[in-house]
Length: 471
Ligand SMILES: [Zn+2]
Ligand SMILES: [Zn+2]
Image (cartoon, rainbow, N blue to C red):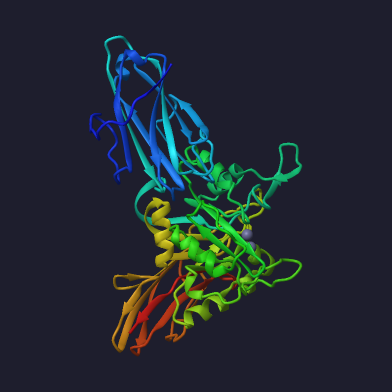
């Protein structure tokens, strides 16, 4: 026998129900009693047009009296999943869904939350509450507090051209979990899986994130076109890569993600099709960041592969795209000391916590430095001026602006000041924990200043983002 109970009034009836960061769009609440024992109760609700993600949080009381309520969901066409008593919250979107539920379109119309009642005792009344949210990003926060978080923003898995060795030593399309294990081995706090024009990796991330709860997994994608490659981070939804770079960037921004130009200086041709960035009519102000360090490039061509000239040309135009690194890893088995292994380069972000929103905000703000090679997690560079840190814009009248440079882990190395108006800097070799300052002349115009750090062999190992002077 099937019964329908329509949603009752919004009641805060369950002690201990989770405090919501934002109000849900719908609340379905009501009672279950012995009359519903061994039945399925259907709770219909309306999904409006324009919904791309649907999330449910569910709770009920009476468990101590052995009430058990199972959970499932149907869309206007049929069942979308059944999680029984094993989950109290779940989410569904076109690209990904909590295991037990099928990813797919969230069509407008009448959906039904289905409650199974395998047990309730005679005389017991249990109260349930289901909170339903539309288009809300599912936020995972793995660590609280402002800190520098190390990550890798560019890598490939079985969902595009990432390969590794199988258990019997055959080269196979490499499953996502191997890349995450490589990130753990490199000590990374976050990674973005950026398969070429694929979104199917996001379903794996949905399943793997609860297990890999020390490594934040960001949805991403390498939007791969005939005129350049761009990463997007923070958007799991499909973005059409066939209709021009400006449109792609606009879609990514509308969905709350970042748009970043990959290996823009790479040659383009039969060896690497569309690898350099020459998208016709692209508005460079739409680029949130530029991949100045690409691990595959560094492995092949050393420091010559750094996209410094491309990045500098945007800075000189008055733009402020954040310099980032990406390993562009295609083989999770590469040893962590090799450029192009997962985490080499690493992008180190100052963020409010270890969550997708905070990491993306830190990148957008330019609160970022890059560890250029593998095996260098202890190497750090920070650029500050008073309260301002790299990425920040300082308003300055004509005069001198003091800049403090802190480099650690590069004893015997050297420091190169990159700027459109470089001030004189000391040439003495770096100490193991080096602090030095310089006076930057402000003429009341816009300027930028960053530093590139080289080791004692003259190889680039660290790149800061700029401080900006603004009139
Ligand atoms: Zn690429
Ligand atoms: Zn790539």
